[in-house]
Image (cartoon, rainbow, N blue to C red; front, side, top):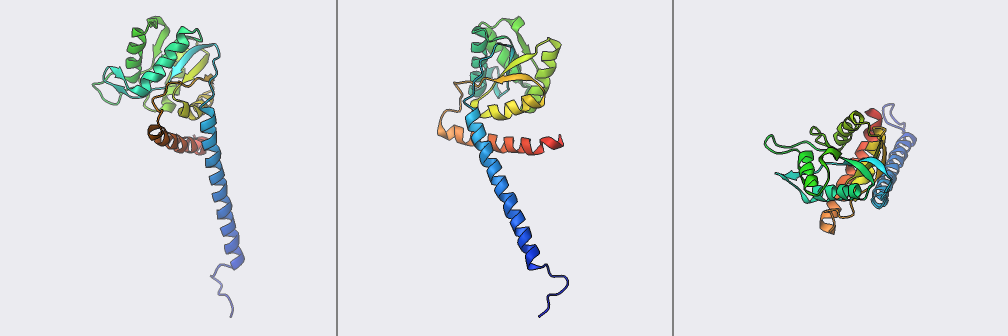
Length: 208
């Protein structure tokens, strides 16, 4: 019996299946590699003398930092007091018109913990991590700051440093060692969220 003209040939179907299988395998390997990179990079703390610490934003509760933001600010204060940085740049806007911005709350907390006001810089416009870097870079350029320690939670650092590289920042990683994400219950969803966002950022980077 002859095969009709419109029917795909078995060899073509097999080639298409193999191609899909190959692409799927590459995708799985890339996600697995990304997961391992996020985990290994979370332990990387580069205590290099720098001009400023850039503290990535997190939620603020009224005039108080959330537990996540508080630990990021605490780490930046530690870097400042130990002499690793001369300035601190706090990032983060606000989710509600009546709230203080994340960066303003961070500044208030830092002032209460003996960080000099002249050594604190803030940006009030960012809502996401990528914007944290965009506006922090603008602040840094206005003040002649050229080297940075990036402060965030350990599992956030791989994506954060990838973004820092995208913005051509001379930056090193310095995750907080007192992250609010300590238990398996809180750390697991945060890890998978970071994995999804990191993979998405890398895949879409060529189109930016």
